[in-house]
Amino acid sequence: MFGKSRLGGVLAGAAGLFLLLPLVAVIPFSFTPKRFLSMPDGEYSLRHYLAIFDPDTWLASIGTSTLVALLSSVIATALATAFGIGIWLRRPASGRLLIGLVLLPIIVPPVTSAVALYFLLAQIGLLDTIPGLVLSHVVMIVPFSVIAILSALSRLDRNLELAARNLGATQLQSIFRVILPNIRFGLFAAWFVSLVMSWEESSVTLFVSGVNVITLPKRIWDNLRLDLDPAVAAISVIMILATTLVILFRKSEA
Amino acid sequence: MMRAHPIPVRRFAATGSLVMLWAWPVILVLAYVLPFAGVTLWSVTRPEFGFENYVRIFTGADFQAIFLRTFWVCLLSTAITIPIAYLLAYYWVMGGARRSRLIEICIFIPFWISVLVRAFGWVVILRNNGLASDVTNALGFGELSTGRNVWSVITGMVHFMVPFAVLPMASVMRKIDRRVLLAALGLGCRPLGVFWRIYLPMSLPGVCSALAMTFIFSLGFFVTPMILGGGRVVMTAESVFVQMFQTANWGLGAALGVVLLVVVFAILWLSQRVMRIEQLMSR
Image 1 (cartoon, each protein chain N blue to C red):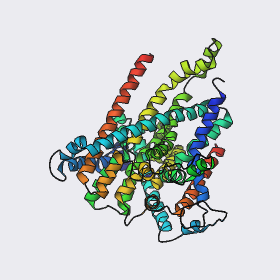
Image 2 (image 1 turned 90 degrees about the horizontal axis):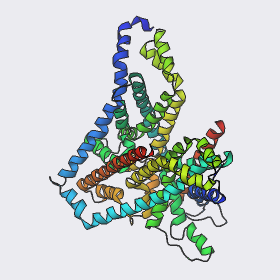
Image 3 (image 1 turned 180 degrees about the horizontal axis):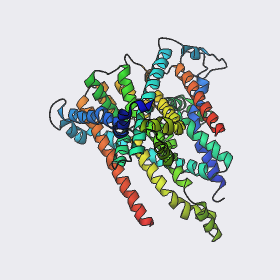
C-alpha cells in the first residue's frame, strides 16, 4: 500500500536468505565420504548418518538429551501452570513483581545463571548428574512456559470459572474441569517450547555437566571445539529438517 | 465423590491456590536467587576475603581489553542486527501474503534451531578454505581469511539475534493503525514521506526494546563467540567460562558474572527510563 520500494523488497529477501544460508550450507558436508569435514567431491556417502547410531557416542547423547528434555519440560510445564493459574485465580497485588521474579532467568545473562546453578549443584552434590541437569534446565525453561500459560489464560473468560463455581464446582474441580481443558492448547505450547528449549540448552549445560552426563549439545560443542567431525553436519541436517517440517506443518494447519 | 470430604476440599480453595501461586517463586528463590548470593560471596572470598577480584577486573589491562572488545563487538552486532531485523519485520507485517509467509519461515526456522547448529553452519562457511573462500576464489578475489576472527564472531552473533529482534518490532508494527497511513497519503504525503515521518516514529518503541534486548543478549552470550572466535576473540561472558574451568579461578569468574549482571540491569533500567521519556514526549 505504501513504501513498497523494489529495493526494500530485494533487501528483505537478502536478509531472509542470510538467515537460511548457514543452515543450507551444512547440507552437502553431511554427505562427504571422507573422515574429515569436506565438500563431497563427486562421491557421496551416508556413513556419517550411520555414525549417529553409535550407541557409545551420539546415540547415547541423544538418549540423555531426550530423557532430560522430557523430564524437565513436564516438570517445568506443571510448575508454570500452577503458577499461572495461581496468578489468574488470586490476582495478587504482588502479581507483577512475582512475574518479574519468575522471568528473571531470561533476562539474566546465561553465563551468570550458569555460574549460579553451578554453585547450587556444587553445594548439594548434584554436579554432572541427571537430576542436577534437570533442575538447572527447569530453572532456565520455566519462564518460557509461564509466558505461554499466561498468554493462554489472558484469553480465558473469567465468567466460565465463576459460572462453574456458582454451579457448585469446588476450586479443584473448576481447575481440572474448566480451566485446564480450556487452556489445553496453551498447555501444549508451554510444554513444547520448554521441550525444545531443554533439548537445545547449551550455556548452563556446559557449566553443570559434561563428564558423566553428556547431552547432544555438549557433544556437538566438544566436536566443534576439538575437531570438526562430519557427524555434526549429519545431526545438524536432521535437526534442520525436523524443525522445517514442524514449522511448515504448523503453518499449513493454521 | 468430592462431597464425601467437604472440609479438605473447601480448604483447598484458600490454601491450594496459594500453594500453586507460591510454589515456583519459592523454589526459584532457593535454587537460583540464593545460589546467586553464594556466587557473590565467592567473588569476595576466593581466593581470600576482600575485593581483590573486582580490583583486578577494573584495573587489569587484560580485563580492560576484554571489556573494550565486548563493548565494541556487542555494539557493532547490535547496530547490524537492528536494520536487518527492521526490514524483515516490516515486510513480515506489511508485505503481501506470500512474501509475508516466506519471511516468516525464514525467521522461525533459525529461531528454533540450536545455536550450536547455527554456529556450525557459519564455521562451514567462514573457516579458512571454507565456502566463502571458495566463492571469492572462484570470483578471482583470492583467499578470504575469515577463520576465527572478530568478523566471523559478529556474523554469527547477528545471525543469532536477528529473529529475536524481529519479534518486538513486528508486535509494535502490527498495532500501527493503517488508517493513519492512508490519511497521510490522502492528505498528499509521498509514500516515502509516510514511512519516514509516520511509520518509522510509530514503530520506534519496538526498535527500542529490540535494541535493549539485542545488546543484553549479546553481552551474556558465549557459545557462538567461542566457536566462531576459537579463543581469539575473548569477551566477558567467555572469560567467565575460561576463569571457571580453564584456570579454575572461581572467585574471579564469579566476580565477572556479578559485574555482567549489574551491567545488564543498568542497561534495563536505562532503557526503561528512555522509553518512559519517549512516551512523555509523544503525548
